[in-house]
Image (tube, rainbow, N blue to C red; front, top):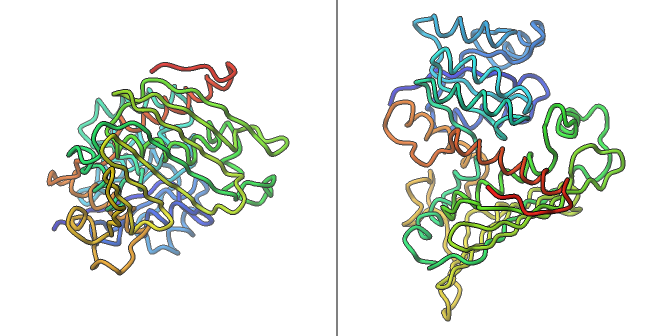
Length: 364
């Protein structure tokens, strides 16, 4: 298979998600990271690039987009791993340069930025891919197929939750990851944007259902915090199904507890991200079954035999491997795209509007 050349915007020294993207991109040997604008500070950008062995370092993403698109050996795709408010501008620059974009979620920090990015994506021949990495888990893809095949029957009840506790106290000023996430100008939202969009995307991806309306109760438990750190959301889905979504970053005892439970009139499935290699499936009136990763139904998205655990990085790598397939025109049909990003932005805005109006229903 052809190996693609990858660039990166953001993800320099001290960045968490940039490292995750780099691990994921190289796990299956589909990409070589050769260029980056890892920081707007030229010295820091150069130092970060040298530490990572990146050949070409830039301190400005516009310069990088222009230079790489002009090279015969320029990058095929770029990963955008900046804080939310800096997703749109670099993504637009690279799309306009004809370079494929792999962007972290949520799509942007504001609705205006999202619209500008959507217009650029629609006008470009380059692909736009959003890294909702939990859709890369083999069992979540199998669950999607089971539901599409009617094994659960008519869907009735969906329970999604994403609970963490790392923002239980006011953030230390030196905590880079917390600082931008709790600044509304940089993040655009709190828990609903950071982790709620993941839960919302996953329930939509697995069930195949669109959301017709939602009602949200958002709250900031930490004094002085300007964004939500806890959210309870009710959703009315297509086909009459009802869903509940809980997202919290102040739930003490929870590290990264993403769970999904889906029930139809013929059966139900239950899965949790912290134990991702097992999923339960129950047909009504029959004993509960345990489905494991690495067998028929999900083997196409696994790398090692069943019983050898795969997890977060492998699921993320599946997104990158699918991205390579889409760029080369050989697959990648399950990838989240600009439409998934716009769905997430509607979710954030609708939650905020509902909460501001004392938890009224907001229609799609």
